Amino acid sequence: MGCLLLETDQIGCYDAAGRPVPCEGSGQDAVRPKKGPASADRFQTQGEVVLDVVTGALWSRNSNPADFPLTWDEACDVAAAMAARRMHGHAHWQLPSRRLLFSLISHQAVNPALPGGHPFTNVFSGYYWTAESCHRFPEQVWHIHLGGGRVTRANKQDASLVWPVSLSEMDVADVFKTGERFVLEGETARDIHTGLIWSRDADPVGGPLSWEESLSAMEVLNRAALHGATDWRVPTIRELESLVDLSADSPALQPGHPFLNVRDAYWSSTTSLYEPRYAWAFYTRDGMVGVGFKPDAGFHLWPVRGNPVASMGRICI
Image (cartoon, rainbow, N blue to C red; front, side, top):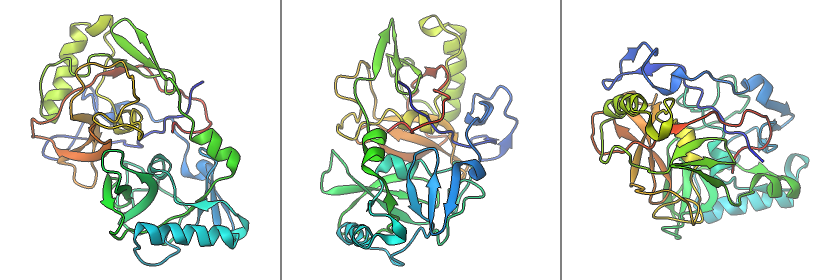
């Protein structure tokens, strides 16, 4: 059964110097039509909480109820206290998972990187804690920068902001569902969660490229009918991030995955609007979502094709 892979929201295209360029024929993220729900349809304000109808999560409308950055343990205590007091009439307050917090990110916005027209208040363009530790460095926890959308790790003694979410037990069981997910189809692997089809060879070009070189290389691979298909593309950052399995590292992919030649870092087709000379990149050792300087020939190309599952429902976790 599939799950919903959210859109990046990106609607503009940019060259390696960060200048706007026409999207037609560019191979960039914005070329693909955006089908995701508008904020007015996705977020329902219910007093002091906001229901995300895509994930089923209830967020505190105040995105910074603690007012100040806290250590991770202190952040956990804030969420536990909100649960004990049944804050805003709800008892399941907790820190969000990494992917649940990342689901709020819009790659068409900065400061904050949230969907346009969102109903949240007191949003700071800083790092917010998640509930999940990094498998590669268990003493560190994932946190997400709401100014731009980076997903990095920090020591538990560091200070980040806290934005609790309320999930019922049914929501937790439904949203945080994994399982076997890849089906081999010749030299490709179909992800049954998202509906995407990935090249089993995760480095078909055989070396690192600059960002614009990766877009051009994708055209060459399509002309050569890589694995018998001509509709391959450079994946968006959400498509790459969907591969992450936080129970593993080096690479942070599902144990027993079918992929070959997995490299440390991959380009996405998504430009960072925080600084358009950079593009979003996926780092496979621990699953970090960061950026790369577009002229830097230090990232690889992992082709994807197909359309993500389009039905509304729980996001891919």
